[in-house]
Length: 117
Image (cartoon, rainbow, N blue to C red; front, side, top):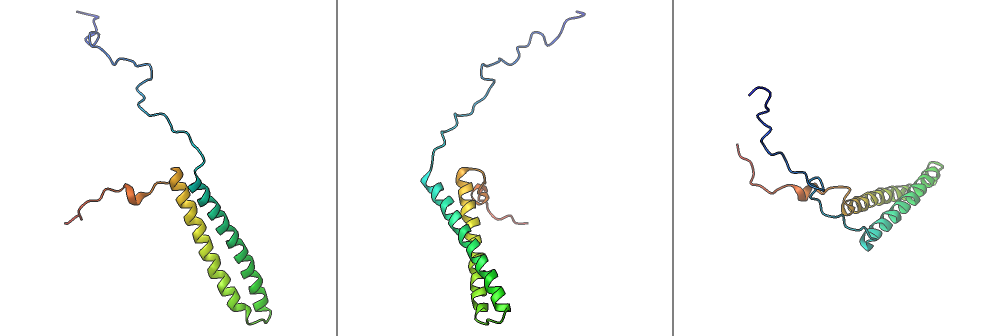
């Protein structure tokens, strides 16, 4: 038959009212006390970091001016500032993981036997 379409008799996909979406409804977001604690802890660590950096700068100026005891204070403030910044970044990472913005790659990898060659 000339002009006939061989695929005309085949049924196509049946359209659905939702277009095939199978996602569950998104849960309501509410204030989580654990996230608030992480955020406040990160903010406190950031504030302590700023204070320790300011103290280290002031101690460094005084130490170069001739006050030998300020070198110890400069070293302690510097180490404390590094620790506070690390703590702040760690708490921010934990909070972002709990919110779902960052993924925890250590948990998502399947545990498998070691690969041997």
